[in-house]
Length: 348
Ligand code: DNO
Image 1 (spheres, rainbow, N blue to C red):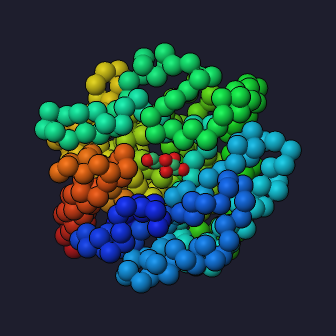
Image 2: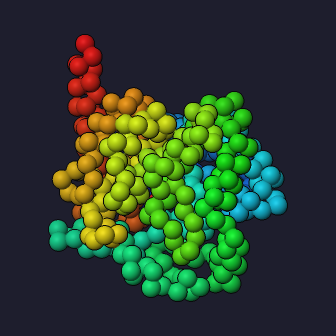
Image 3: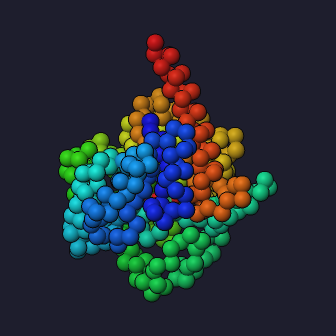
């Protein structure tokens, strides 16, 4: 296991010199943020990130994300060119030692929440999701918290329309087509692709979502069996669906889990949840049980503490402040040390 920390590049308010001081931190998870989706990431930009990490004693082995262009998800005419560009980006990353690339295949929207600063009685605040509230919004005039409003309303409408014939099956076929297109370069450079589950893991605004549960993973690995086709096991995303047995899934897919986003949520209703501190007892997910299952299953990937709360007066990027994620890393490091030692002892 390698513990990592997400870093939003040079514009991040948290400097690398702070990240390196978090105990047990091996490296950062970052990305080139100023290249439009679909274009090739230039080696110079990658090299800049690589050097900054190196200067700070941190590894640069995980990218989150190389975003997938909507036309690849749609299976549009120019998808081959876009896939070729994606593969070229992977090649450029591979040359700088990148070993794991997180991405998602959610149409139009990435993660969705209704509140980025839900107040807790202890004075902290965190992200939360209320299903009814989200569903009551007018999709053609959306202003979601955290949602980048780079789409103009007409553009968004056009994009939503272009998905109207895209069924779950079609979207899955387009994912497989994309993966088959990039697998050769992944194998050549030893890059593990790690698909992020849909967050939350159900259809949104009539758009299909296909990476939601155990069945999705069965289909995915059957269609593209290379080990380089793996997953980002995001406990907060998958855990929002009450039917997902995360402990079982963590053990079953441990070797396909190239990247684990470990975070806690607390159920507020059938579909509603609030993000909580990382510890098992502060929320609804068995974080200890998940770590144990990962170790038992032979997990050997990257971990990062996921979304933290704003605590100690910090007003961080929602989910991505310093303090609570650092506490999360310390807690997770403790769990892994204890559980890994337990297994080593048992094997003796
Ligand atoms: C949110 C993140 C996601 C994730 C992408 C991966 O905090 O977990 O935005 O980075 O879905 O492509």
